[in-house]
Image (tube, rainbow, N blue to C red; front, side):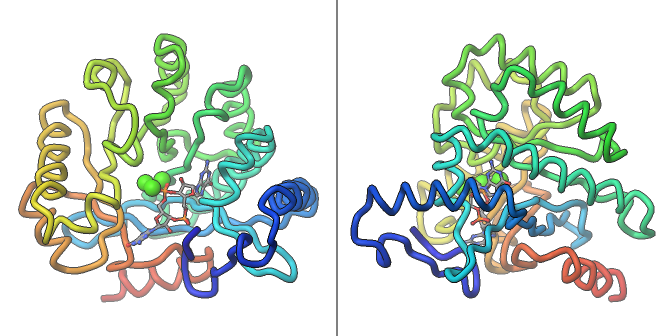
Length: 279
Ligand code: C2E
Ligand code: CA
Ligand code: CA
Ligand code: CA
């Protein structure tokens, strides 16, 4: 496990000798946390080539009493295995849509897109489309501003049912981004069939584009692929000006990463937006 921000340094392995009991305990805590509303969303800005904030990615945070922050990289996979991803995913969607609905009335925020990570397990749930419809109706969030980040693990499912579901959500006005692109089970034949609007270059490729010819070649190829398929391309994990400049030179127009901002609680995001607007 790795830390996911300042103070987020919980390593269960280090604290609990027995891996199995640690997992069981984490699983119990996860179930309790759902009941006790111990989750929060942080928001990481996404910027265009002019430096304007065009949207945010919602990233879930779990504050576990007496332990600190648990990384989603640690508990999301566990939630997927135990089925807890269903209620957790619903909570995440509801929280993100509530925020999106609020922004619709805030000057300078109504244009912001909200990207929400949807795990393949959650997406493939029988009633997922109805659930999204329900949450949109409950919160009043504008569907046209909502974007789902899907991963290539969806390709392990029956592709026609995935496409049908994506189309049903497109009909509601939502958009799709393919997250961690190039790290999973990509098949270009499938890629062409999915009703996607955006590809997201994985941070694993972005990190070393300046030193690693192969990573640079992959990033350039994803950008070119996006262009020829008519898809937006966003790079995540943009940490330095040099990253941004290289990506920009290759034709990438959207960026997300520590160079601009870490994921922020909503109040701090408001300050960040105000600062950018002010100068
Ligand atoms: P992801 O979707 O690929 O999210 C990007 C991760 O990279 C986030 O970690 C983010 O904080 C981090 N990051 C952003 N900018 C930079 C940067 O410049 N440098 C580096 N080194 N890292 C950066 P986080 O928040 O710990 O999330 C980890 C993973 O957990 C996510 O990867 C996603 O797969 C999953 N996850 C997070 N929130 C949710 C959620 O609400 N639902 C679902 N299903 N999964 C989530
Ligand atoms: Ca993501
Ligand atoms: Ca990603
Ligand atoms: Ca990732």
